[in-house]
Length: 172
Ligand SMILES: [Zn+2]
Image 1: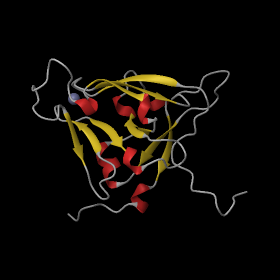
Image 2 (image 1 turned 45 degrees about the vertical axis):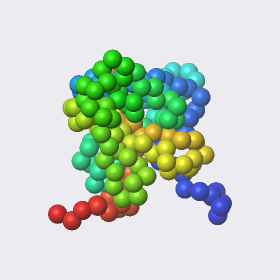
Image 3 (image 1 turned 30 degrees about the vertical axis):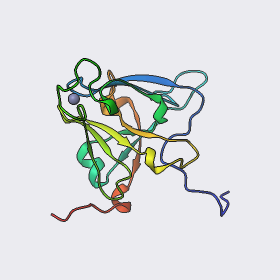
């Protein structure tokens, strides 16, 4: 039963009270961080019978970067090295201004795509400037491909037809 005032459901899984934290890093290790999400990537016995539905989108940027996305609260992404602040104390200047993070912006420029300046790994998308939509607070879209010791074949995916919703920025 849908009411006329009901907003479209955001693509990410709704938190179910069971959280899990995953260690992640880019290929070269310049970026090291943890990501906490709910529900966990794998369903556990007992309290949580649900697994996070990882978003696999076919739009022009997701398909090229190979994004497989989860959407933690921005506060639940903890940067141990790299990230927004660059490479951290003691190594400042090694990679010049702005550390080892590079961004790619397109379209609305509200969703900078973060990647490692050194190894090119696609870390995810900063969607905080899109505001508090979906009633879930400010979020990041993080690429599960950076998570350590995760077998991608064991995850549950939700396919999003972004190709039909977003046109490519370019004509080649
Ligand atoms: Zn890297």
